[in-house]
Length: 213
Image (cartoon, rainbow, N blue to C red):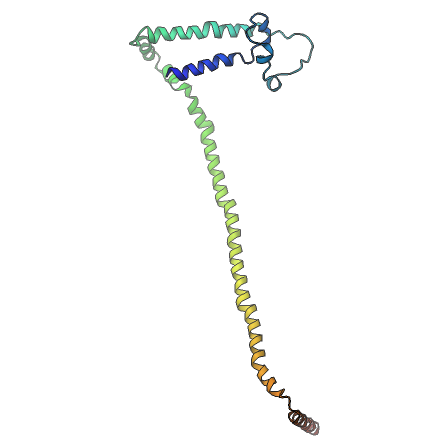
């Protein structure tokens, strides 16, 4: 367990020098100012000051850094050593839990931050995602699938029309021409006497018609 903590501690020590206040270099020139104090200046800070002159940070900044690094962090480590290391039975910790059960419950639950995120962000996003999935499934995919089915039905209808109506009409004309061509082919025998006989019959029909009318 000590290895991950040691890695995080090392990263914290190195990361602490990032954005090292430039004004502190006058008192603690530990690291090069140009490397660490301005490494993300174009992103988070103003590159050129509005007014010329040296910017002096307020005293509260140094006070907070002193409190966090010199008093708070060593005090927390000392308190943990007294409660857990010096007293292996953890009697002080158990007494504190017995005396302040609600506070222990809140601290043990990490102030219910995870529950808050679950209720305020995760669950609404999951419900919203489910709504988007339903919209995509029933509306978007439904439109695409409906268009595909409509195209298939229309294609099948057009195939039926082409196969049975258009091709049927063409085949019917071809059948009629084929069947009647035998009759007309018999009339076109190529013999002159047949043609003369047909002309004579036609002349008789015409004359008889004129006589009757």
